[in-house]
Length: 84
Image: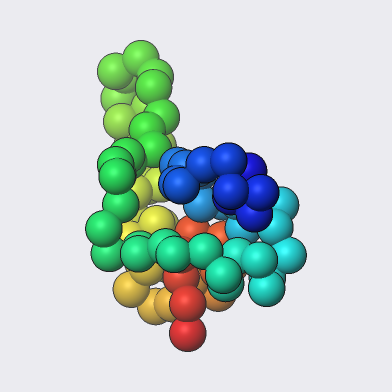
């Protein structure tokens, strides 16, 4: 639609866009990762039991540790806006 001049702008989920456009087309889009329209944290919904609370705390710790040591960036690559 953009290429054909039918729209001036559109909003899309970055992961879908990055997986469906060739890199040269993705690079031609005006995208500012520092100014998203919306930012949403993913969540896991479960019953509040001691076992589930321990599980969620473990998952949160692993994600935090992976962010700190760079593993999350290595795994996700450019798919979530991580760039070297």
